Amino acid sequence: MNMPLATLAIEVKSLAKSYGRLKAVDGISFAVGAGEIFGMVGPNGAGKTTTIECLEGMRSPDSGEIRVLGLDPRKDGRELRERIGVQLQQSSLPDDMKVWEALDLFSSYYRKPAPWQPLLDRLEITDKRNVRFSKLSGGQKQRLFIALALVNDPELVFLDELTTGLDPHARRSMWDLVRGIRERGKTVFLTTHYMEEAEHLCDRVLVIDHGRIVALDSPANLVRGLKSEVRILFTAGPGFDPASLEGLPGVSRVERIGERVMVAGQGDRLICLVINALDARGVRFRDLRTEQPDLEDVFLALTAEAGLDGGSR
Amino acid sequence: MKGFWKLAWIEIKIYLRQPEATFFTLAFPILLLLLFGSIYGNKPNPFFDGRGMVDVSTPAYLAMIIGSTGLLSIAITVSSYREKGVLRRFRATPLRPAAVLASQVIVHFLMTLIGGILLIVTARLVYGLHFAGRPLAVLFGFTLSCLSFFAVGFLLASVARTARVAYILGMVLYFPNLFLSGATIPKQTFPQALRAASKFIPLTHVVNLMQGLWIGDPLGKHVLEVAVLAGLLVLGVAVSAKAFRWE
Image 1 (cartoon, each protein chain N blue to C red):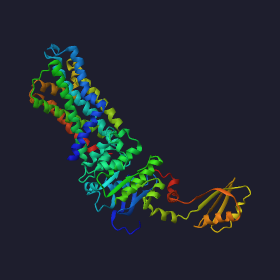
Image 2 (cartoon, rainbow over the protein chains, first blue to last red):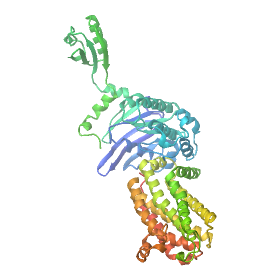
Image 3 (cartoon, one colour):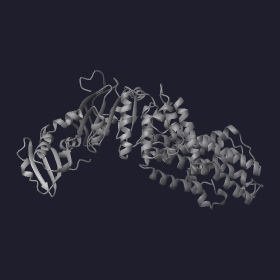
Image 4 (cartoon, each protein chain N blue to C red):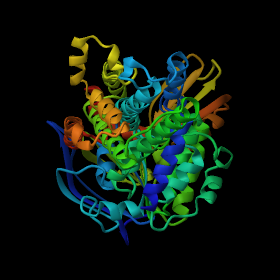
């Protein structure tokens, strides 16, 4: 999905929030279109949670303008909470509350609740309906929290660090769930510190660091913008002379460590050229693998400065 | 409002699923009654100004239940709800924040009331408990005492940064209140100095009020107790309103 954004779900102008002398969010502006999966990524302490909480009306910004579904979260907080779904980082339910009770309870808070039985099925926790919250696994708790975030059939869903602490399998199935939410016409605003997650899931990604926006684009454009190298790695017999590949267009360097050869360079045709050259010279190679820049490289490049002086705050 | 009552109902169920809370509110007072009742019975006893042990202890045990729900259960539940992020999760819904706290008051009041009724019924059936008071006056005294001690529970939850601190504060207050107020050990056994000191223990005033109203004292005879408890209520609400944090 590309801009322009026909209808805006979220509009933020010059949002700022400080805690004492720390500028957690330092004047950021962005917009999220209806129907988008919009991701916010950044190192710990970059300002993700502060931003999302200002959007949800859980926290008051020091300055700036926020419109969420056309409402001001500060003034119309209750009305906004009717229409959004929220999955919070660091939240919980009473230990002895059962799954079905939580859904029954939370749906009673809304004017137009969605039936919660089908939600149990969709989130595959139907067999846990009589289980107490404290007895659920981390993944099951997250599923329940997503169910609670969907119980009012919201137009916009906020997911804060949805998959932190989940195993890879549970993480993948969360992604399917998030895509499913969007397919039902909802807007999704999520934060994550897994770049893989942002890359797979989000239409657009906002990279935030030290409370400022350092990049905002689709994952593909962000990766393309990062002019980093493609690496080709393979294993060749001792007779192979790596220097023979150095003259190929786009190749910037070739290294050999034992039997393993690494060719680094740029250009869309690099892989093709290298393989053809090897083939033409009758080189027998195996275990060929390529490493292409991904969002993680973009993230590391953009937030490198912060990483050096200890990005966590 | 629908959400509020549903919350209160679920909180009652949750309360009953916690063995320690249920034990101290519902079972322990009855066990204590049966223990001392089996030793002393309920015969008129000069030691208790000519009344029976059970007739004197039952209203005192009511104070014990009020002390434990207020100082321990409310303080611990509310502070751990905050610490774990339960309050946060509720706050992200259209439910009014005050409703979350009000539901705790209702649930704890109901549980205290049920504990009291079970105690009274047991005392009546087993030891032929006598009652010479006016039920409405007793209910008033009981309700005022509950609200005062619940307000102190909220105060503890407000000033304690963590659930652990709230738990410790609650315990530190609960035990002197329990033993020095006459709620468990009859004040008739106290030496003179201790009896004087017990005036400074808040729960003493609940014990005095409940014991007085139980034998039919007019409320006018207990202005001091009512004033102390009302003062405690105001103090608890005022400090909580100022210091309470949702996260």
